[in-house]
Image (tube, rainbow, N blue to C red; front, side, top):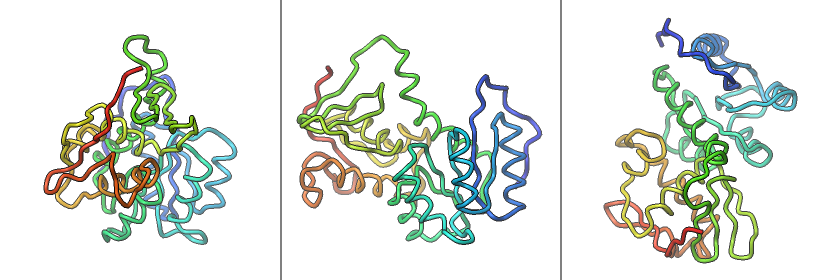
Length: 250
């Protein structure tokens, strides 16, 4: 994993990255690389230290290993999804598809296996941060409709919130919200997995990248009246997905 000697342009408010990994060499490489690209980097070798950092100061994104001493990365990711709204990227040596599915099911925004290309990892981190920061950007925009409505639900791009037919909040991760927004904005259009990945991450899906399928499953469980018989997010055999409700801009 070569380290670039050309840092990115400085930013006014550098993003705060928390690396949770007990491998001191990986931590050193990530700290130096991301620090050289305009990030403020904190590190934690276990869950106890991770919670200490999160309780002490604002963190923009967590980069999580799985094989940690004490509580493992899967358990910590589940805990973060229940109590913390920021994005999580799992970065681990465990590349089996079942581990990837589990990590995404628990709410990770992305899953990267070691050894990794540092430039690709940087691009993925920036992509996830853009999605997470989209509400703040939208809040200062004054043009265009504010919300999208379908079957009694209201999706608000500015506040990054989804409310149900009775006004109840439906909590979504940043990745789930980004996926739903793409589907809603392209209602009654068939979108392939590659198109969805490009809209959300800015890159095409790899031949074994099934993260869209996992996120679709999570979305269905959260928003479909009957997730076992989805009527809103429909699978189009051999192609992709279609969002079927009529969408109104309000």
